Amino acid sequence: MNTDVLIVGSGCSGLYCALKLPRDIRITLITKSDLESNDSFLAQGGMCMLKEQSDFDSFFEDTLKAGHYENDKESVEIMINSSPEVVKDLVSYGADFARNDDGSLAYTREGAHSHNRIIFHEDVTGKEITSTLLAQVKKLSNVTLMEYTTMVDIIERDNKCYGAIIRKQNGTLEKVTAAYTVMACGGVGGLYRFSTNFRHLTGDSLAIAKKHGIELKNPDYVQIHPTTFYTKKHEDRSFLISESVRGEGAKLLDKNMNRFVNELLPRDVLTGKIREQMKKDGTDFVWEDLRTIPRDELVSHFPNIIEHCKEMGYDVFKEPIPVVPAQHYFMGGVKVNHHSRTSMECLYAVGETACNGVHGRNRLASNSLLESLVFAKRAAGQMAELGFVNDEIAAKKAADSIDLADYSDEKAVEREYRKLAMEAIEGRTSVGTEEIVESGIAYIQA
Image (cartoon, rainbow, N blue to C red; front, side, top):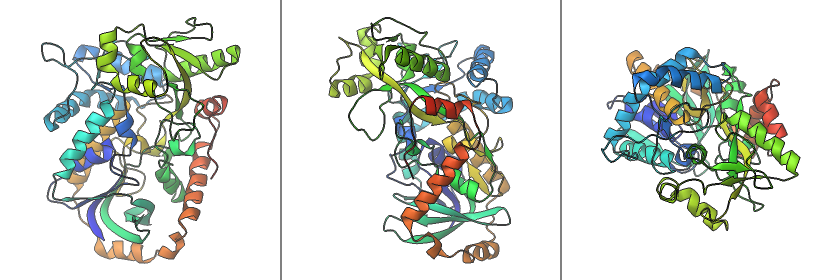
């Protein structure tokens, strides 16, 4: 198979990249599960936006402070300044965000934000954005969508990517050559026993990058979300209790129902405080009280959370709910420049797969969707600028050097890639890794 651009992943970054590429090129977009099973669909709280220029300095400082000042400042500046145009795009595509009575966008606030600057759609903002993008992509005649299709390796020669090897739904392997390949494969949550991520997101791109000597950046920076619903029942993934809940006034309580912390601390700091309280109380969770939020606000803003808690036996209008930290987000990843290009020619990485340095050591709440969209658009822009010349002779030579039999044992490939991804994450001691270990969030063994 041959295509102009191969995009691996159907989250918001992969979809937006496809939408921003020229209409006269061939795009193939593959995804490991179904088109909607990606973490972009799970994002609850919202998406940050520079609502007025006077908020730039505060937005910039909040992002850096949350990231322990390890952020790439130029990346942060690009992200913030690009946000109004991205929101304008989303609205033009049909995304529906909460509005004030006068029709203007409504803004909420989350942990470590100095001001309200987060747009939202109830408590399912990611679903609203990603489903809107997916609907637009499905209208494009130049885009081929392939579900249940896994990237098992890239095709490369002399540090240039010529496409990828894919495993299709029926198990057959195929070589796909492309002028450009975009890894939009999501994060690493599937490696952990307790995570808010989909199980199939196991850091494939991280493993493949490590295998081919592609530069990584901060692969040990893994974020723990302070508040996920605690249950003794086995669940595929931990249910997130959005940071927006605390932004709107929810309180965290110890076993004696006393407030013990400032709920709007940065995520890594708050996770530490919750862990300390759990140790002090001898409990597996702390309580979160949503009754401090006005009932009408709770109903309109958080219907999904209300319903999930009800299904689990808790009435948020009458009682607090048990919450516990869980693995949530990957700040590190495949190192990219400000146009999302990796250290390998013709290979790009976007979304949670990539690390452009925006988040530093710890991501500020609701910067993930924005960062994914901004840098996916920049990747598409650079590819269009460079042109889509496919060196068919070189691509064939690179593809012919690969024996598909080497990938025939699907389970063996999965084990190898889990091992490589874990090795990358644990490559050096860091706050991120310590948070995971001390939170009792263990790996699922390869």
